[in-house]
Image (cartoon, rainbow, N blue to C red; front, side):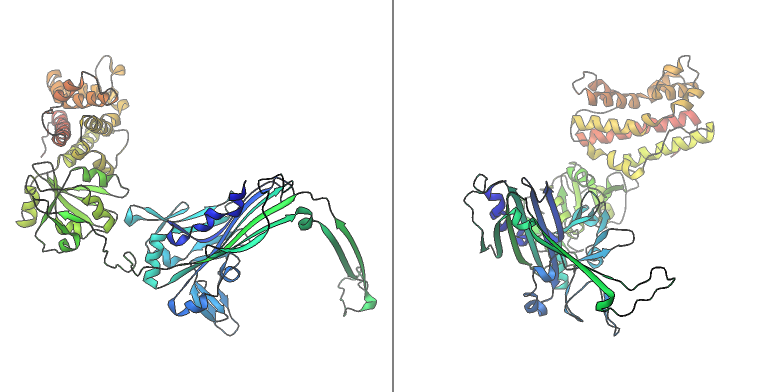
Length: 585
């Protein structure tokens, strides 16, 4: 360690009123060595906090480390006269609550340990859920709002909260948070002159709104010195009695002894730097989450072909009569967020379900752009609007025709998205296979929502992502095929060497002939070869695989992805019809 470390000048300049994270309660110790020996180093940080309303600010100014620091233990108290102090209340005097605890302490003497509990009102107001040691807010992409830190034995060390969310809560309750914290750093050295601290002298100073003290002491002065012992006992109790009773204590029935001595031998110097500070965290009057205040920090969106923009607040009207255009990348960007999902309504329209509870209706237009009614974007939470704004573009390709028909003519298209049809025919084939052959076609199930998030036309942005889309399709079909059951049904002489696709194709050929079965499996084989191309993208067979899968390489990548899904689904539909001779809609 060095003088910069012990003097803490960098640390004292930093304040929590401008930090991302604010400690609500902390008691963190890190040390190495024996505190009575040379080469011992340690660092301790302790913090306590209480939130106060404006009417008690004057009294709260007097509260400091001794009254709201780590030694303050927030617990309920029942008075003998029937009054009751809840665990949330901070009392300046008995029955005089003036503040609010945001962290509670719950000692557990029977089972051992001590719990720190984040105020449930804060948890519910900000709509948080617990995940591991973190409190997260699902409505904002599961962002971590508060977190707990424990030592190796699961003793609580610290609870801290993001200042942005703390200010929101404080504003809703019209409270200001007062922190009182203490930082100590210690190192034991052989001699001061031959250490990094040569030239330092003990002193005390006001610094950065707090108090700093430097102590330099002999170890022997701290741990050595004189000691004395006084022992007294009773002499009139008969231990042989079954139920002895002691009378009043007197000089003639007591005795005592004393001893004293000196402890020496501690060599070295203890250099100790300490810093105390009280700090206020004041809200800015805005509570977007708890009180649902209007957010002034909203984006502007392009609404005209000349790039004219309008404020989000101007678009937040159900009768606004405008649409917005976005790059198709926005769909995958949103699906990459935890809790978001995709739903299809028609071949070209669907909705994005977000963790905020909104369902954003969109359409895909002729230019492969996403079109959305402006009000559906403007009513979203601020953070979601900013994501959409990042993909906002000048209008091109008109409004999605199917979206327009649905929203202006009340005539939803009688079409189906290729993504939904693919999953539908897979389920149809599985059901019919089990009914006919009394065996499962697939080795395991898949999650419908997860499958739609991974298998959709928007995944195809370039050649590499198109190949990855093929891999996902193969995973949900070919990789799940029950090879064991298919071999039982196959009549091929080398069926033990055949893979899943070949086995199913051979079983189909028993019904429709080898040539027709080969034709039906074309798109599946093409997608399988594309999947192999994902690992070897320079392979010369990729173009052949695209042709086999029925993909026009001249089309946009979004259209290529749509074609891949459509053709693969049509192959499965044809397999079903060939096996069971029951063409279905």
